[in-house]
Image (cartoon, rainbow, N blue to C red; front, side, top):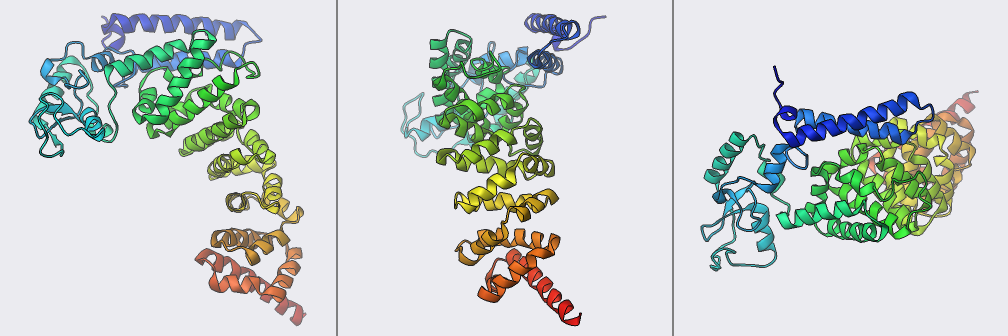
Length: 462
């Protein structure tokens, strides 16, 4: 008895599945038979398995090779009344204009946002521009989709984004194909993808919806382990496009989990132009918005090249690098990795030089919950510098972070109490913060003062 489902119902999908299986067999044979197999071979095998899994589950409603998504994208047999007059495609969120005509929301919204105040079909001047959901057409489209085996996306996903026409989508696919061509075509295609994903949010979404679009974007950079032979402009445009694509919330997980993304971002941090390196750091910052990505990026070893770039201190990259390190160190295991990779020394050096003090103090305060970090802060003589910032800074957040670090040092090392006591005696720095600081700063300052008072009482009693 034949099995039901996607893999047995559509010849195109069956052919794709057979191709994937054949490729998987070849890769597995290489891994089993060749003792010198590469990590890239494992990644390719993993990608083939993931692609097979997608075909089997058929969960993607757009951007896959399933019959459903092809019908949705191209509306091959869609009744004319279900097509948007602007996009010529199946409507996902039909709305009624004041002229009485029905359009797909993102496309008519794009028309109105461009300043047009007429109906595209009738040229009638609109008495108002409020869009009214066409529930009847929506229900009819929904019923038709069910009969065709098409999953219609929820309209809320498209309410805030401009639509992409079939012509624009076809152009997008042609650009992806050029990424496997000769260098001049690659450079031209990546440059245009860079511009499109910068200016038009819908193109960012299209990357996430389209199967293999992200691996295809990386094609110009993934030919070798070293990027030294890659054209600098090409590398910058690929990394910047990856950054733009990562901004879209629904893309963060699939982008980070694409096997070559994080290694290529790490390579860009080490070897790219300063603009490329800065954008690679910004991409890691954007991707690290998800906790699962924080762990993945940390395990990949990305903190070390970020810290190396921070240590170099190039003004263009500092903000993006510091932001990425801060985000990654929110989870405990990455704090340990950052400390092990020398974060405390690099950060303290910059703070003492007065470079990006605000961001770096926030990172140092976060790291100070790690025991080894506290030991390094103490050993590197940071206490006088931190006390000076509390005394002289006009930034309440900086004072709060400094006193939090000092409080941790005070708890762990009584030999530093003398410096704290002298600062208090000479300037009243800690008492002032206990009165005028943020609520957290007051709490930490009072904790230090209480310990100093107890130490004096114990001395007197003795």
